[in-house]
Length: 553
Image 1 (tube, rainbow, N blue to C red):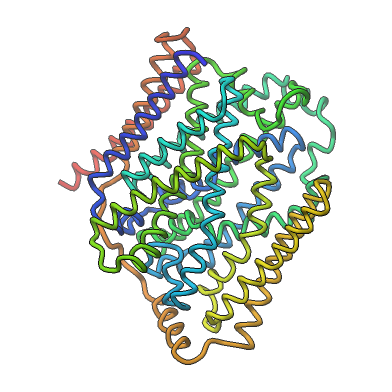
Image 2: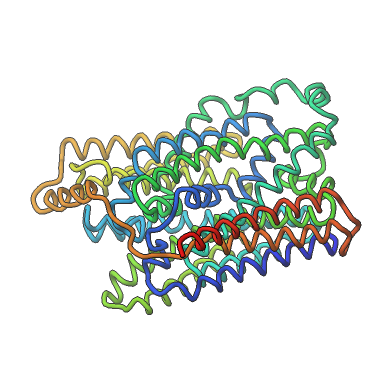
């Protein structure tokens, strides 16, 4: 890594911290810290929705799957498109009308205090483990690209993310999400054609790669596996606290659905770029002697000029930090509102709650970092670890929650029965997987996910049909669903986020332009041109805001 790359990376980290500092002074209430004053727009929320999903893990692992198996990697990732569309259509408006600050807060109004606490504590391990995997992914990328230990990279991304999330809350998260989206899109779009050219063009790629690389489905990822993965994706989209947070933090019902539609479009357009990069790399890099999960780092280091490689590292850091910051914020919200305010100090002031929220953000981030370092030490396969963890925890922790948003008849006992049934099925398959050996792991993971989903859904349906909610609990359910018919207004006014986002993007562009013209490295037209492009985007965002303010005055 050259001085120019370090300059870009340092600029990126400094600007992220400055965003957190800028918004730390504006956060004076729990609602602003964890829900952005319910003022999230469709475009900013849609981009943030995507960046809360597209982590370094997504880019590194799916590029590696493309390198190993071809277009089936894209088939797997594109399950996000129908999943996001379906979840948006069914749930976006409902989440917005609940008037909540956390994804589990409504469970007490809908069911009971015990059910609320059950789903708080049962879902937390999965959220923290997922954060840890995201930290591991950036560690692998940086280790391969810079020839250094991944431990230092994991520590850097973990601590910087904790710092700006802890300071600025949700608005710091969504503003940095937008900046990071611009960096990620720029990096992956520029690397793709360079990789295709290094592979010798389309004809050479087709001639060199095996025919099954161009099949949308093939072993070991069969249609059955894709179907089970679609179930996983839908459950993840419906129950991911970070994504749910975008829905209930929107300005209104229309903006809430606009967030989902925008995200679905971006999920369709962006993943082919980095997955094809992995496929094209297979045409000129032999699959022997290195970990396939490092392929994206290798082509970045080999093909990108100084400065641009720093931008790519910044982009991958950005992808990791977006997902982690989103998760840290919403998990801290759950612990602050559902645990501290509800159980420990019900009459806490807004100042105290914001202080507690910031402290819990730091604690959760450090815990996820510690787990990430353990995963690196044990050399776990990230994709298998993700599917195993989600297959075990996701159905029983998500389905009863979303059933509570859809069914008036489901009782607290029915929600508990569905949870226990899903956990039981997961334990059976987990035991079978440990006995059957690694050769059966893929089949067991897929079967576990589908079986746990079907059993949990069946028990929930049976409970609502045969043993519906009664008495006072039925009245509570009726009041909750009456609330879902009413439109909830925004709660607090916030400043236009475009100026800060534009400033950060512009600063990154200026640094790249200077590097491309010969500062700290040999001049390079690609680096300079990219810098000009980012500078133009940043200037346009600030100029638009200036014109709007001038017209209003």
